[in-house]
Length: 186
Image (cartoon, rainbow, N blue to C red; front, side, top):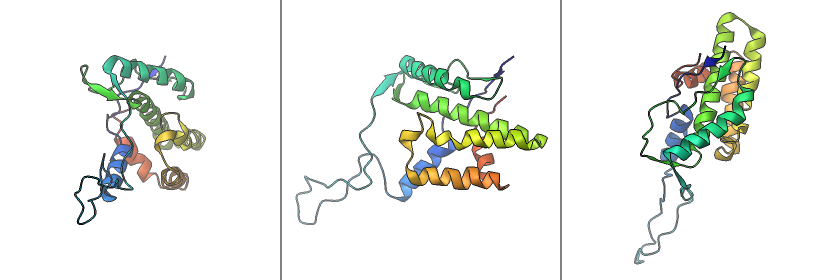
């Protein structure tokens, strides 16, 4: 019998961290610095924090196809007995337009939530072997195909040090907080 994975919140803790860092550094889509004093202002210089051009957009059906393709690729690395929902969980606008990669990222977030759930179950059961196995899987989260292109070296370092490393040392507070963004895993 496979355990269904319950929905993950469409907005993850990772998104919140990126949003907070972006706001703190003045990063915003298309942000520019003011033109030099005395100029006409017609040629504002792009800020060093300018976000790259938006990715192509997808219809809802293509977004779901992207999600399904990613779940197929990730299915073999889920915990024994776990499976992905057939469609992205949560409330999605069928007439909406989705940025390319959102479906794949949803699959990656569900994968992450599933392994966090495995870690928490093992921790509650006092199963050190299963706990370590779950942490070993979570350690590779930043290398998933949907995640790797979206994280920089500093973010990867923080993940390994402050989330995985801290949990290995007994402080799983950040991992627990990430798990709270998951609607649940079964």
